[in-house]
Image 1 (cartoon, helix red, strand yellow):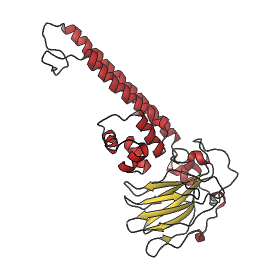
Image 2 (cartoon, helix red, strand yellow):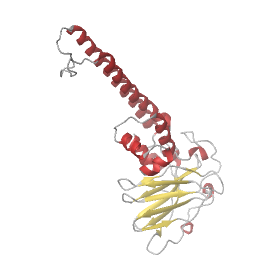
Image 3 (cartoon, helix red, strand yellow):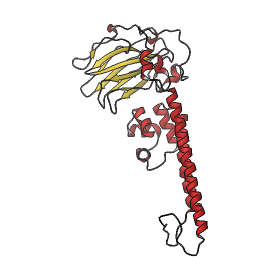
Length: 299
């Protein structure tokens, strides 16, 4: 889960250390499972990656509880022999001690481990259930796109996920439910990679999307007010960024794609709520770097 949050942030280890005020070596130990991440570090990672910290805290607390329980069992019920070693079955060396008492402590330890394990499984199941319930299907996002990309300014209610405008900044559009009514405002090509601006009228938010890409390719969406989010392909062929606020009539949205062979950008869309879909919204890219395609809703 920590690795997924880091990938979503698009930050390197050095950048992550700088943004969270925790050292690079600490993050390496946490990502490799050598140490349990601290709650403060977890909250900072959730903040920079746009993750709802309440969705990951139950798993974190379960892990901390499990480790604390194991440490207490070692202190209270650990059954070492006189030479400081344990038999394979966890019982103490027969040195005049009551074997029944030793067997009882072993059973208590096993029951404690089983209880902690069951708690972790229940927490994980609850997290997955909440995520799956709020996850829109690909069909839902595609079929909800209207035949025109003109977004209505009358959609003032918040999205099913509860975010609207600036409160959507940094959030995942699918997990927040904003992908349900998403439309493609503009499309362009950087070499063979396709970049898009996706927009939700319900959420008044937008994000970058790229397809037909290769690992290492990226697309960034920016706003006239300094908003910026990046989608980076770690594996596979496509990716999408967290959201930016697109509620203002002068939002000034622009998407730029970058890969090893070149870079290209779309023209700025001033007001996404009333932006028409037309080829002339696209700029002429640098020679050999990007070519524009006809814009339109995603099919």
